[in-house]
Amino acid sequence: KAGVTQTPRYLIKTRGQQVTLSCSPISGHRSVSWYQQTPGQGLQFLFEYFSETQRNKGNFPGRFSGRQFSNSRSEMNVSTLELGDSALYLCASSSAGWGQETQYFGPGTRLLVL
Amino acid sequence: QQQVKQSPQSLIVQKGGISIINCAYENTAFDYFPWYQQFPGKGPALLIAIRPDVSEKKEGRFTISFNKSAKQFSLHIMDSQPGDSATYFCAATSQNGNAGGTSYGKLTFGQGTILTVHP
Image 1 (cartoon, rainbow over the protein chains, first blue to last red):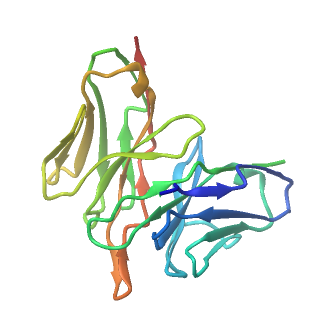
Image 2: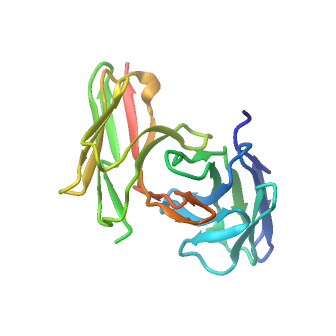
């Protein structure tokens, strides 16, 4: 099976702009989670989508949003970008159900906000 | 209550030595504890994981020790190799489900440990 793919891999934006990142989960996986990774804050949970519904949300401002499509692909959007949004954004997918806890991470999208 | 505290921040070990990384959690609802390994430029990859109903799990050179009463768990890497040099993250999560299905999609991570194994 192909792994989790994320596009684009690198992105440079300026303050005030918005950005959309895309994630394609492993085939058959219904849960997609997003994380922000920075040197100072480490890995922080953004949100989880399961069968097109947001199931969990982390402590991020409303500028961060996401959605999941019927084919389980997911997008996250950040509006009104700030310098502090510069980070590696990671997507992870997993199957649902007992014994299927493993989350498989993609390579991430590195976002630089200037 | 959602925090996972990880130590040390960095660790230097000689080839063949034992690497030990420790984590502590507060939320007793956590019921799945994975360890992830991350190389530069890559996403984290699952190394080994444990549930709180067992005290130890071993996979090759990697062992998790789990102390439920102390709310602590640790990763032991035996016979450490230069190829093990990476950043290691402990994590914790709990089940979230409904009739539509169960998932463990919210991982709470420790701050990470940078492991360097000298040849």
